[in-house]
Image (cartoon, rainbow over all chains, first blue to last red; front, side, top):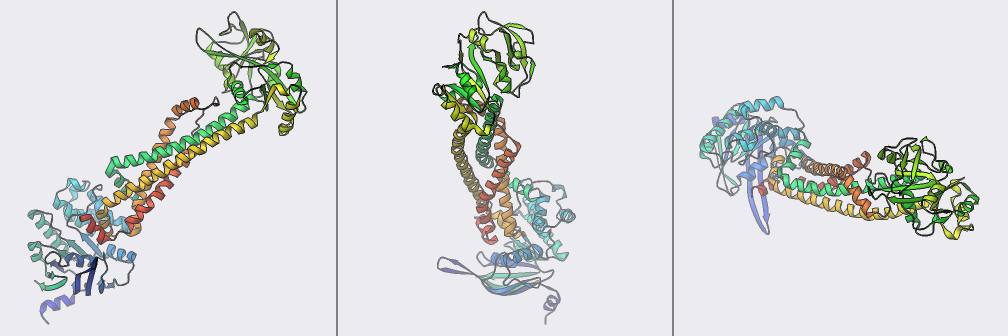
Amino acid sequence: MPVQELMTAAKPIVVEANGLTKIYHRGNEEIRALDNVSFVLNECDFTAIVGPSGAGKTTLLQLLGCMDTPSAGEISIGGQSTRGLADSQLTRLRREQVGFVFQNFGLLPTLSVIENITLPTLFSRRKAKARADELLDIVGLKHRRDHRPHELSGGEMQRAAIARALINSPKLLLADEPTGNLDSVNGAAIIDLFHKLNHDGLSVVVVTHNAILAESAHRIITMRDGKIESDTHS
Amino acid sequence: MIWLSLAIQNGMRRKVRTLVTMMGVAIAVAALFSLISFQRGYQLGMQGELDRLGAHVLVVPKGCPYDAASIALHGASWPCYLKADYLNKVRQTEGVQTASPILMNAVYSADTGVQSVYLGAEKGLLAVKRGWHINGKFPEAANECLIGSTTASTHHLSIGNTFALPGIEGEYGKVSGILAPTQGADDTFCYMTIENAQRIFHRPNQLTHILVRLTDPNQMDNVVNGLRACEAGMDMNVVPLAHLFHTIQGLVNTTRTLLGCVALVALLIAGAGVSNTVLMAVAERTREIGVMRALGASPGDIFKLIWLETVSTCLAGGFLGVLSSGLASRAVETWLRGQLPFSPTGALVHPELNVALLCLLAAMVLGSVSGLLPAWRASRLSPVEAIRQGAM
């Protein structure tokens, strides 16, 4: 067995996907967004999912984040299978195990940075003031604590969104085109931040068209037509 | 950060739209509050007015009993008169405890343009007006007068003063007593002996009305039948005041029912408006709802958020409606007095805290019901669909 595979096998599994298939219907047309996709993500992995538009990258990310259910196949998050789980159970799993980062940041415009960061704790009924302050420090936004999103730069908004994704201390961070709306300088800062978080033990999965971000990942899954075309470890 | 604060902040994003929605609720709630306050005020005012009159039955000349009652309560000149002889017939009727004759006349002072109301009465009136407190004594001598508190204050009169009777040339009166405030029309009246009034107004052996108290008010129907059957019965109108109260209240209640339906329709329209506004807000914030679902919000959380947003908008509208209705109550009262054929002297619109709370509760119920559809639709949004739709 190659050394890389031995190392991978030694780490605990965070996500296990088996035969994932997602079919959408548009009228009589059947669209197979994912077709029998299987892979394993381990703890502390930094994985980039790349591929052309329509390859199924975002669909895969949504399934990994329990935001949708597969038409066929099975997915386990932190050792718990999502098969047959009710919406409330999927919500709890997502809330506790997964953090989401979006291309358009998704910050609530009426809330300050600190209020946006603590928003998920409203849903998890937790108190996380100390954690929020710690995250503000990690993402370098202490000085922007009480600012509204419209007062921030794109890079700052994305850093606030990342802090928000981490407030419930998830094991897995999913990011959909996190640098898509940023210039190269801010994009590079976000990439650095992802690596720092990954170095601290967080599993990161990014869907991206950004070659620099993809090449900096430990593993690149390339998708085409709903299937994994290649899966390479650096 | 709490749910309500988040809901209010969401509502404040579109300030103008939220304000217009709130105004719709405010108008409906203001209509409801005014209506209930008017009904309470009118009822209390009428009851107070009749209590102050002190009589169980009013005997008046033939004609419209409601007009006659209105004149007797508020004070004015009468179009026709009773013969003084009828008083004995009334007093002889079984069940009548006290019958107090009155001759009322109103005159305008050319100098001031103010109406002065004079009443000739006997001392027996005090057996009818049991709530009166007189500083001094009831008129006994020909020129003595009992002055209402407002009139005494207006003309700076005190006991023993002699004054020219306003609006009556060449006539003077001496203040024998001043009536303590009654909060009714009596405060503006000037009482004198009935003989003096008959002389001044050239109405010898005539009366305008007779105030009757019964030995047993439960025997009202028997006494009224007795009065109508007496020798003078054909020439006078016997008005049981309790019946009068119920009849007027019935007329007011009919109007109230009609206006109540209008207020209800206004509430329903406001509710539909609120629902539509929040549905629009949900459509605009579809992506945001998707993001919140991705961040761990359950369908119940989304429902709660949208529902709270609707309820808080309606409550704010309700508060605005109650406040504006309370502030405008004087203006509404003035307008109502112009519309009503008969209105009591006291406050016509009677805003009360419990009515205000009831109206706020109605606004809350309206918000709760109006918010159900948008909250339900928002909570049913699939996170994936919500994010995808919102990105379009």
